[in-house]
Length: 611
Image 1: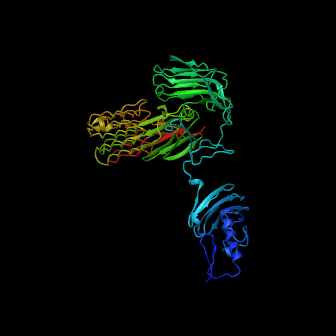
Image 2: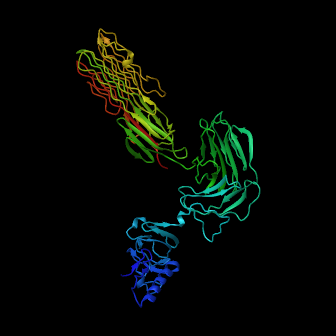
Image 3: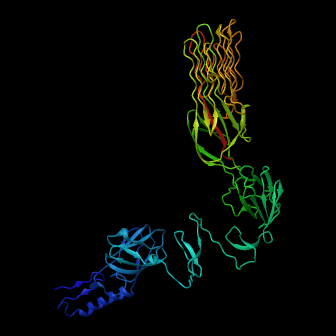
């Protein structure tokens, strides 16, 4: 019967009566193997890019207790050489324990695992030592699985590295409460060096910008709060906090001049009115948060404490990291986007969404300008002898930022402040239909356009001469004109600026005439002027408003002309429709011809998007 071998150390088990005369050598092989497994060390060169399988022989070929005959059964294994790729080092698929030293070079990983079980290995960090054990298929790192370790004291000649954003927890004497230090989840690595001594009472810890901490006086000692509220422009004394009362209106607080490192100034919203009446903080020649801008405090109940650091950063807010003193600009998508210098333009010719992802601030820009034009009203048709009237222009709304250099229309109001990010629905109104080619049919009113609750009303429809249409048909952003008819008293044109806005969004439509002397009709009202009244002949439509909001001058929202009269910026003679996306009124017709449709509206949004 031949010898057999143990499954783990591969020690030879002698068969009865076998190996006569060779027992001394075989026993020595076994002892060498046991010696290596308990106290043995081997260095294995794993240089290169290929995986390595450690040498594993039966004890009969184990001629000494060192390197070449058997590597697997050494207690301590050191891996050496320059790695050229990430590699696996395999041991037997048998139970055991090892001390491993990854002493390789090259920026690659070394994973120690059982043969046939590469996925269950353990990565041994380069330059470190690990204690591991295996059940034959999975390697376990003992050090990473120690759990909570209790020590009375801890001494280290190197860094104590807490991974995975762990905390350094310092418990109190009861063991029930603690204070902890923890790095931020997205920290850029840095080191803070503590001061060499404890400092004095009322001092603060400051940094030199390189991580060296020291104690310093805060404006020479304790902070003094002036409990008498400030209600008008004032300069803050270094080391002082003030309560600012803006119930009577906004004002300016000026930081101390020529400050020294450690100087302190603080501001608190006394009546929680900063949102409606803000405080402007005048930097007084020094930077604020690294920028050469004055800043606005405009959050209800806001309090900000400033400490002067140096000439590079200037005053830094130390208690209100929610406040951004850097210039920020609006970021948004939606519509057809173009740029004009530092200004971005979003043009919507159909309904859509203005999606704001960043609302900007007053140091950069948080103001929006816009042009909103509603759909124009349709013109009216007539019988064979009377004239049809022009439709009113769609309501015209414009706003312009004071810092924006484009030429606005005379109807422009002030730009709005964008308060929130999110989705803003855009509505673009359709033009009203013109009257068909039949006797005495009024047009229909245009549809509204809107953005952020700012509405341009649809243009008023033109009245036919024989129509007793109620005022609601003819009224609108601009009023529709009124037709004339033989023997029919002339009717007034529709009322513009309905509903009323400031500046007005449109003008009145022109009046129709009766016959005798004629059956002429009034022009539709425009954004810039009222429609003409009928006289010896039909009247022109009112003028539109001209704006260069999209980088070139364009006239929009003109009234439709009556019959053969001009529509100026709206629909022209003989039933011409208003131009698409201008909100022009439809032109009237004569002698039974169909009248023009009102032009569709549009929405344009403009803002400064960079410095």
